[in-house]
Length: 159
Image (cartoon, rainbow, N blue to C red; front, side):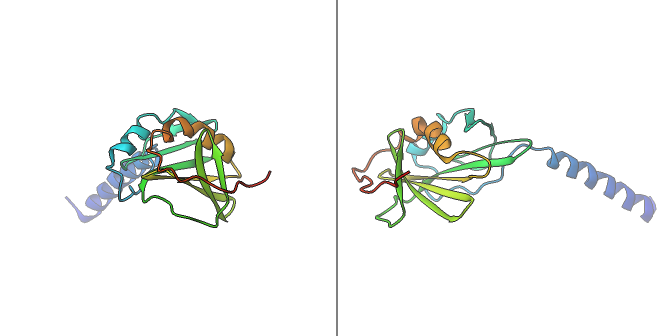
């Protein structure tokens, strides 16, 4: 085979491989250190098909979840297995019986971390595309499976 034909064949194979991975709906994520905690398994098996109106997408990491659609991409990411959150100066809110620390330092992307649950869950979302309140309410039935530590938010934001 000539060098030109070999190069053309290689380019064709790489092009097909690129098309196949470009169509993939799998979201690449990194598992938390405690992702193998059985409590995280109890959460992930209960994650809904929709969160804040977004369709569930497959992830490639244990104890994670992702939601989004073709137009907006991935708009909600969930990771279970983080260390329990300690006292914080971040605002705290409760949705569906779960307390959440609210970090808006990357607004319009927000990071919500469970408070008073072990292990912790983190939800990262784009407020320009989805409602944080709706997403947390949709996730609450699954996240409630995490053992409560007895710690609770003492201050809630006023809206």
